[in-house]
Length: 304
Figure 1: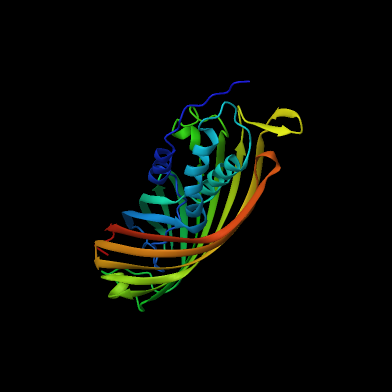
Figure 2: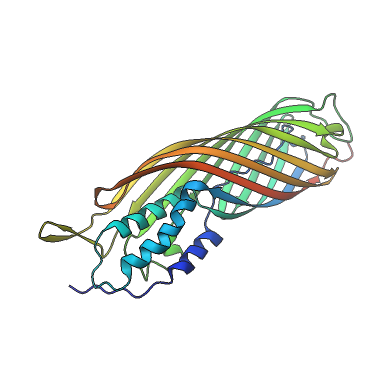
């Protein structure tokens, strides 16, 4: 039995993963004051998703994948392949790398706004309800400068890492795919600078994040030894879900129409246990830091 694989520039794979991996939208840039009725906010943000557990796995991707396929006639499931599978799963659970998003928010009624965001290839829908503070505008301010709101955000994405970069053509070992759905509930408080955030604000709060994850391996030419027998590795399809808990602080600095928005969020999560090939399992937990910086433009309602 001769199953040959060419040498793989796996360090290039690592760079591709870092450059264009889909990161779940976890930055919190909103303040406790929602978009006033009839107004729009549009903006863009750039930042990064830095997760300790997947970061620790990325070196393992490079080293184990090279060892797994270089100079072998047949590929059998062993420790190197197992580490490769772990690292791919960890990366899909919480991709590390840069993030970029564009968004628009609108206030359809008093104390409620809705938004759409396109974040690093992910479509995000959300809504915020303001339960505390005035609801005016800089042109027609209310009384008070302290705000509170709560929101709900939904997003979904697929992570077909190997096929996405045409690496599966060179490495038909795992054929790994993953799909995730994310719910985020932020509780936000803020203090206005100037009437109704005319020159900005400072915001802080807590975040609950829950991810629903489905993943699978469909190996094509991967084998294992069982005694004197050689058999093909069976595919694996599994589901899981896990919570994350975070805190954040952000700011808004500008005047009336145009603002800069720096923000940082920190999360802790226990990802749970995951079934891999050949009956293997792994589990991990870690901390995620999400720094961002953005620009925001306010539109509409200026004559009120």
